[in-house]
Image (cartoon, rainbow, N blue to C red):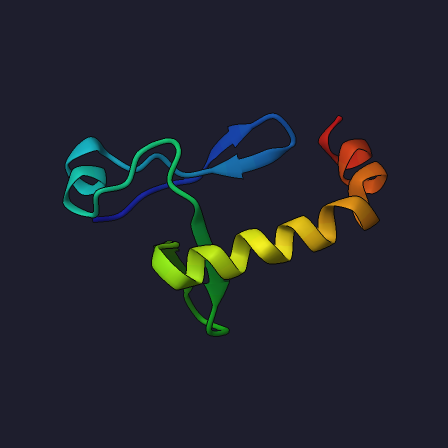
Length: 74
């Protein structure tokens, strides 16, 4: 399947069709991890122990970077 990026504000996004979301058991509340291997963009749902680690890292990072992240969000 080939896709093109769509403009979303000052960013770009990709639409993931419902059958793929259902196949992977992903909904709008599912946290996704995004990384690259230098040639590919890899997006996967965060589940189980990995999800707990991500949440803990966010709890540590948010207080230190709250103001900067809010500015970026505007």
